[in-house]
Structures are given as C-alpha cells and as structure tokens.
Amino acid sequence: MIDSHCHLTDPRLGEQLQGVLDRAAAAGVTRMITVGTSLEDDRRCVELCRRLPQVRCAIGIHPNYVAESNLEDVDEIASLQMDPSVVALGEMGLDYHYSQETKSRQRDFFIRQLELARKAGRPVVIHCREAVEDTLAILRDFTGVLALFHCFTGTLHEARQVVDAGYYLGFGGAVTFKKSEALRDVAREVPTDRFVMETDAPYLTPEPMRKIKINEPAMVMHTAAVVAAARGCDVDEVDRLSTASVRRFFGWDSQ
Image 1 (cartoon, rainbow, N blue to C red):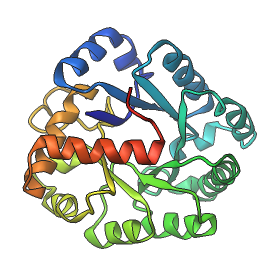
Image 2 (cartoon, rainbow, N blue to C red; image 1 turned 135 degrees about the horizontal axis):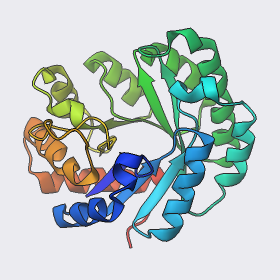
Image 3 (spheres, one colour; image 1 turned 90 degrees about the vertical axis):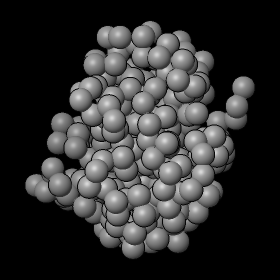
C-alpha cells in the first residue's frame, strides 16, 4: 500500500519518524508521499526525501498558508520542483471553511501554482474545502493539468463533477467516520481507476483508531478496509487499484 498523502515533516510525526516508518512497514505500507504546505515546509520535504528512498513529495503553498506567504515563493518552488524527489505540486487550492477572509489571495496563489504546473508538466494535489465549484471553474482554464482532490469530503454530485473533468479523488480517514455514509457512497461509485488511498497524517485519524490523536501512514489500512467494504471487495483489491492510480497520477514506478 502507498500512503499517497501525509505530512512527515509535521513535528508530531517528525519527532518519532523512525517509529512511524517502522510501523508503516509492519502494516504493509511500503511507500509514502509527504506533502508540503509552505515554502519552508517544501524545503523540508525535499530534504527528507533525499534521505528516504521510500518517500517522495509534493510541494506547494496550502490555501490556509497564503496569508503568511508571498507570491514570489512560487518562483522558488519552480526551482525546487526540479529535484527528482518531487512527483507533484501542491497542496494547493481553495478553503472556504477556515479562510473566507483570504478568498482573493487564495485564488491568486492557486492560479500562480497552476501556471507553474502547466509549464513544468506537473500533476497537482488539490486542497478543496467547501469550494468545489470555484475550484473546478479555475481548473477549466488549465486543461492538460492533471489534478487529485485529496481527502475528498464532498457530495456524490460533486464527486461525479470531479471525475467527469478527468481528475482523481483521494480517500482519507473521513470516509471511516460514523456519519460519513454519503462519502462511503462516493467510494462505492468512483471508477476503479480514479481513486487513491491516503491518511493526511497526522490529521484525520480513521476509525477505529480515532482515540489516537496522531494519525500516521500505517493507519491507511483501516481506511482501505472501509473503502473495500463499501465497494464489495477485499483490501488487496483496493491496494492494487490505489497503487495503480498512484503510479499513473504521480509517475512513481514501483521499485
């Protein structure tokens, strides 16, 4: 299994990194993609990947970090993304839940990063919260840029819009929550070649582990089990499908 989205540079994981990696391997999670949220974090992601052959990274500026970032940071990301450890740009996008007051600035950063992705030929990892329509509207101006809506929590209608546009969905711990039956319907209906598994660790710990406040890559197996149950298949099949999608989307061939 590949955890397609985690934050290994977060101190909650970084301070116990070897244990996190050991527990992931024991659970059958052999590879991870760690994702940056700011220019400083992006640099840490690249440095980490240089030490860990089982980890690759996506680098970008998260919409909740735009207030403390400069648009010129994207120019530095343009240079940093040439490192062989980088497999995508992001996470980037729009968040209307926490950051209503920065909508215009979020849009500026999103567009600037999409321009870089188009120029560099990179896929993008999308953070989208309560903003599916606006996110898709912006992406329409960037045909040819492949996008993954990570930790998707939208409606079935929104999921169909995303998939119909040619993009991918990521399923994280939210799909396991007791009140997430509608999201499990999405997991049931998404095409076999359009979804990946992720944790968003250290966030969104899945059931039945929610009492453990710090999520980690090993726990992606609990999420995979719920997606497997929703789809009427076994975890091995979800692993196979997700791994194939990760390889196709990120261009990360197995070793």
